[in-house]
Image (cartoon, rainbow, N blue to C red; front, side, top):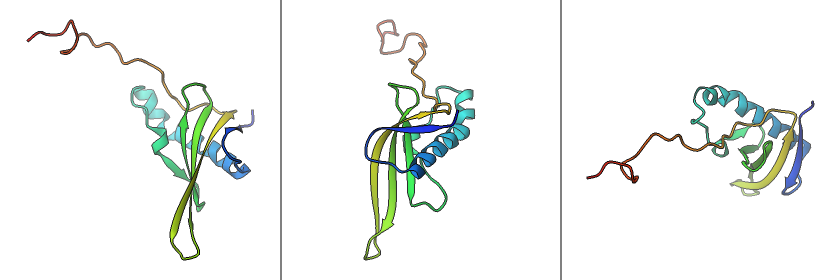
Length: 126
């Protein structure tokens, strides 16, 4: 199945943006899948990783949504220079649904129970 991106919420995004979103998701999956498989508790904060492709002025920060698999919140940041030569940044936030590729791993697990702690009712008394 060919990968596709559908805009759920936000302003219009170009076809190049859609291709870049797919490429960034594949990049993040390739980069971090080994770490996640080794220790599922060690999930990177995908939203803090802004990926820039080539010489493009745009960078993409992608965060998987817990409510539905295959949906992502994307922040597209663009860096440009104004008429006076000063560097400016603009960003838009969109929500997209991606089909045709495996979603980024985002566990919904509770922390393992390691027994009584010092602050629990069954913990050690002073």
